[in-house]
Each structure stands twice: as structure tokens, then as C-alpha cells.
Amino acid sequence: MKLNALYTNVRFPALFWPDSAANAFAIENGVLTWVGNASQVPTAQLASFAHHDAGGAWVTPGLVDCHTHLVYAGHRAHEFASRLSGVSYEEIARAGGGIVSTVRATREASETELFDRSAPRLEALLSEGVCAIEIKSGYGLDLDTERKQLRIARKLARAYDVRVCATFLGAHVVPPEFSGRAQEYINEVCEWILPALYDEGLVDAVDVFCERIGFTLAQTQCVFDKAHTLGLPVKLHAEQLSNMEGAALASTYGAMSCDHLEHLSSAGIAAMKAAGTVAVLLPGAFYALRETVLPPVPALREANIPMAVATDHNPGTSPCLSALLTMNMACTLFRLTVDEAVLGLTRHAAHALRLESGYGAITVGTPANLVMWKVHDLAELACHFGGVPAHVTIRNGVLR
Ligand code: NIG
Ligand code: FE
Image (cartoon, rainbow, N blue to C red; front, side, top):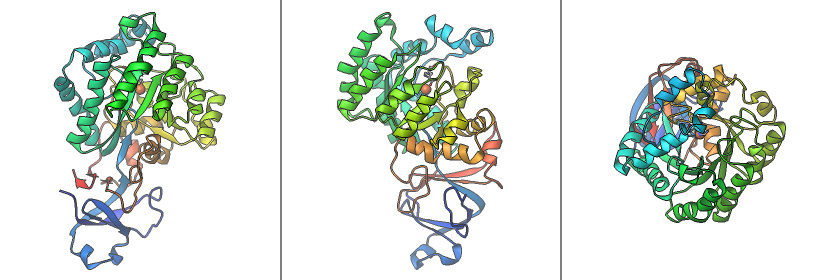
């Protein structure tokens, strides 16, 4: 049931609500209708709402996880063990493991099975206050399996009443049956798979893995041209393992975001700045692969490029189901400030997905997506790891 409620004794971070006198908010039929000081609750109607003393909780927008590969079957724990013994992610991929092994398992799983495996992953993220999430395909690499993944993204949105952006990542790697024929696969993606899924209303955005073990710049360009023709926004897995100058290319298509970016060049930074492209940092993958080259955070900061932070949940490089742990890693590994990390999982993540107003912000007049954190200091969201502070989530106007 949509909330009618008045919450008092809350605190708003200046990042999200500059009026320091505000300590209360009201929700009417699920919509945030008022924020202010408890001494000025506006109408008799508000006064008659259920009244909750939040005990000094800090209020943030609901968290936004703007980069995940949540829908897949199988597992890759054995690769974790191999990497520990010195085999690299690229070597595993070249030997037929990695993404391709998840593709095999995902193709074999029925839609019901895949939904049942994916739902608990979503539940884990929602339980930490996530209110919007991006979910990519890319473990199908054929029409039927890509469709199956994207349909599940849509079903999860309905089943959990959560805002989901479905991203087509058909150009993740070359599928085994096209081995040695990458361009032919790209043609198939552009002429057949992407248009069909677009026609079925399953695609909100288009992504490519531009990398030595993914696709070249020219192949990325083919997919982006098709996306443009269909009017779909693009984003890119860019400069994760090497500098392909993918960010510069993506920026010429007005990319919503470029993600990973460990090897981002200064030309890439300039292009992203000019295009208004968000930098999505993925410390989970950096950590799991024990990378040593950091994304150029000081240069991104200097250029005023918005930095988002996401879990990149996937079975290989980031089997992480915690937005708060990711926030901690963004600070500890990438040296983001607490404010940057909090904005990275709220405002800037919402912008990376070009979400409607009300996500990633505290906006009166929009459906309430808020978290009330029972912490003394907002920095506790980022400084703890391995535990989640007590909190209450209001997602799409409903108390969860
Ligand atoms: O974001 N880099 C490519 N894609 C994923 C990894 C997917 C996988 O290894 O299954 C990523 O890290
Ligand atoms: Fe990814």
C-alpha cells in the first residue's frame, strides 16, 4: 500500500537538501509531498497522517546501481581459484572460460530457472536500499538467450516494483559458434538481434565490451550506429584492461556513461567532458582482478566529470552483491571522498542511466525512493564493510 506518513526527527545531508532546518518529510499516497521543519507541518491533512519519529536517522535518496550483469546461470568460483594461482582473467577468457562459460550455462537454463537464480541477487541489493538498477544482457549472444535475459529484467521490475533499466550487451564477447568471425557476429547483432529485441520493447540502452578480448573500436562503432538509428542511448565498457580509446568513440555518440576506465587517456577524459558522459567506476572488478592501474580519479575530478559507482555484479570479475561494500571500496581503493562515493551511488548513478527526476535525489512531487539510515554520521555508510547499518527503505512510495 502506498504510504501516507509524516516522518519527523530526520536529518538531511546538505548534499541532497541544503536547508539545514529541515528535519521532517511527508509522503502522500506514495509521493514525497513535503520536506521542512517539523514545527511547520503545513496542513491539517498532514497532521492527520501516521506519524513516525525516525530517531535522528539520516535520509538519502534510494541507492542506484547503474551497472550490473545480474541475470545469469552457472558459477565461476573455479576461476577465482585459478586466478589465485596466477592465471589471468584474459588467459582464462582465451582458453574458453570466463564470459563464454557463463554464456553456456545461461543458454541451457530455462526462463523460470534463470528468474529464480536472479531474484535473490536483486533481493540482496534491494535489502541495502537500492531503488533503481541497470541489468544487462550479454550472457546469451544469440537472439533467444539475449531475449530471455532481457525479459527477466522486465519481469524482475514488475515482481519487485523496482525501476530497472534493461541494457542490451549482445556485443559482450564473440560467441563460440562465431569464433574467428567477429565481424560476422557483429553484423548479426546489428541486422537481426538488436532490431528484433528493440521491436519487442526489451531494450532501453546499448552497451559494448570494447577490449582486446571483446570488440574493436570499428566493431563498437557498427553497434553504436545501429543503436543511433533506432534512437537508443549508448554506453561502453571502456579501457578496463587496456586503452582502446573507446571512451573517445563513445563520447562522439553522446554516450550516457563510460564504465571501468582504469586505462582512460587524457583524450578520453576531454571527449567525455565535452559530451557530458558520466564516468562509472567499478571497484569490485578492480579488486577481484587485483588490478594495479587505478582509474584517473584526480583527472576526472579536475575535469568535473560526474563519477558514478556501481557493483558491476557478475559471476566472474565482480561477484559482489553489496552497494555499501562497493561504496567502501570506491573510497579505500580509488580514494573517492565519502561525499563522492555517496553521490556515486545516488545522483551520478541516476544521471548515468538518465533516470527521471526523483531517482538519486530528494525531489518533492515525485514517488518516494528514500532510505533512512540509523547512523550517527553519514560516513558510516562508506566506512563499514561486511555489515549493513540499520535502515528503512521507502521504494516507489511503499515502506519495505
Ligand atoms: O564488467 N568486462 C566485461 N564484462 C564484465 C565481466 C563479465 C564476466 O567476466 O562475466 C565486467 O567486468
Ligand atoms: Fe560490466
